[in-house]
Amino acid sequence: MIETLLGHVDTLLLLACAGGALAGGALMLVLRQPMRVAMALIATMLFLAGIYGLLGMHFIAAFQVLIYVGAVMLFMVYVIMLLEVRESDGARYSRLLLPGAAGLLVLLFALAASVWRPLPSPKGEIGDIGYGIAAFSADFLGPYWLLFELTSVLLVAAVVAALAAIRVGRQAAEGRKHG
Amino acid sequence: MDRTQLLIGVAVALFSFGLVGVIVRRHVLVMLMCMELMLNGVNLSLVTFAQQTSTTAGAVLVFLIFVVATVEIALAIPIVLLLARTKRTLDLGAYSDLKG
Image 1: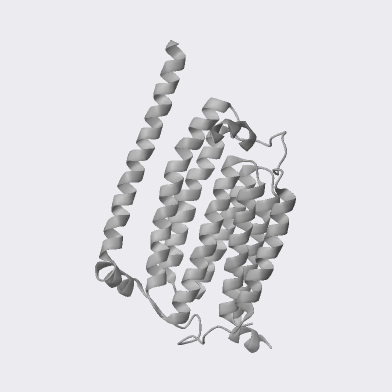
Image 2: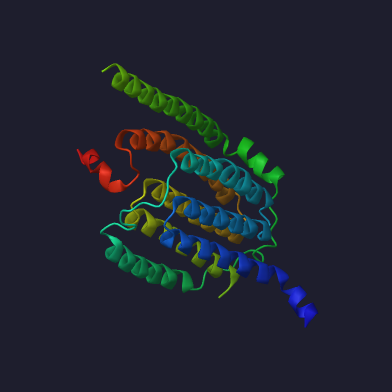
């Protein structure tokens, strides 16, 4: 019994991580306070990192934790604390709640039906195919070097745009102070 | 149902949750987080297909999506801060004058 369970421990962990990610995503729709929504998203991201690790994509799992949880969500949580966002008195959902829920059901059924059809058989069992950081780095310096360079350009453009947005905010604040 | 179908199903569900969250929620920061959830769903499908086909293109695209998500947040947060300072609220209804 225990040996059977140990033989399928990776499948059980994959199911647990998938269930946790789905639960976190569903909680994001129903929780009211933004900080709790952020915690649900962080939990979803950590479960997804677990799935990537179980699939053998360890470096993507590390990126997921470092970039998404460590940088993006930390930034988001910091902004929520900075703005002191608390439970609002207004409505939680927009007028599009019913059409949105109906659309979600239709979308889920349509996509589930398309996913349910047999997919082409993989070249190996999912999770057994290793893809390390060495192959990833070689690809980035080889066939995908242009994408890598464009990524750096995009990051520089984002920094400039963020600085411009902050400057606009400062100018507006100074205008209100003097006018 | 094999593992590929399970993971693609999870990816589809996460993307759908995020899409519905963007449509039905009224809080600007919650909408931003739902967009991140959509990107996470896309990432999961790319990783699954990269594993299934034993190709590296999916993993490279995941890395690019990480960068795009970071850029999106780096730009969206200053805009949200400006809007919050101007309107004193993060409810989407207060920004209806942005329609033009």
